Image (cartoon, rainbow, N blue to C red):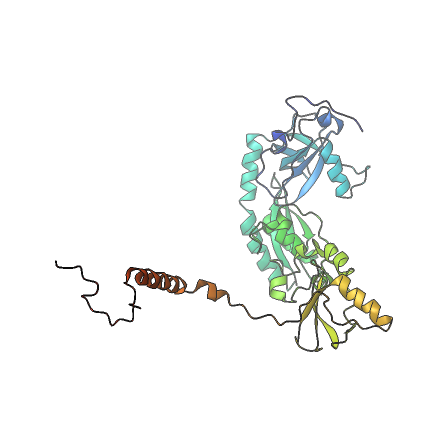
Length: 385
């Protein structure tokens, strides 16, 4: 691997890798500022509306940086997008997108001019009304589909209609009606529910922006097995995301739980001791603790032990030996219940002060007077002589 010299101006992360970007799927270019990194690959990554990204060739050798608005080749005409990545990291992103090395890429024409931006803004202003009208047209044609978003090309010659459908849809008649209504070239693109949520964006129940709108590009299927491995309550309302599918974050810790479950004993194997038979009740997977009950159907005499101790008892049972008790460190004396509210009693300081006050009063009184309350005023009054 080639080594790059490190100078005082090249230590840590470079600020040029952040760039200016207000769109989704933001990427930090950690090769920014590295010598020769920008010259190795004459490729750029350009982002359009929401999460749509494509790769282009910079044949004109333009000085492009992250955040620049460029006019790129399209079919037909040209489109306007934002440069999100340049240099060596683009080649890595292409591998991640499963693009073959011989894939033909389109070109970057130029940096966007003011005339291009005016036409771009004019086309974008039509997107919302076009989406509402196209939904009504699809409903009138009786098509079982939902048009989730419309994206106009930068020059206004083409419009992409993103739709969601459970089955196959014959939209040949729809394309004819849309072309006559909007006078543009129509392109239909089917997306899934997760992709729609990523394009729209939003805040998840965790309080952060949704993963599909910030960094996720490939959506792996989430099965109910990930829920079972993590011992999560199967509540559809809590497990479903804004796309009405199982949350993608259920897969994040699934592998860790699978490895932790392998270290636990078999749940269907009871533990035999001299005190009786104990059955599996619940387990703390990550902590490696298992709780056993003397009843199969309810919590009775719950005892929590480690997974190693449970496996040890199972091995002893197979040899025909029963240990004295389940937990070898257990105390025979029953534990007394402890009420946390006792230590916060409002009168705990009054009792102590009362005892100290009584002791001080007895020391001030003469001998023989026990402080029974029957003494007279003359016994404590000063002499009048």
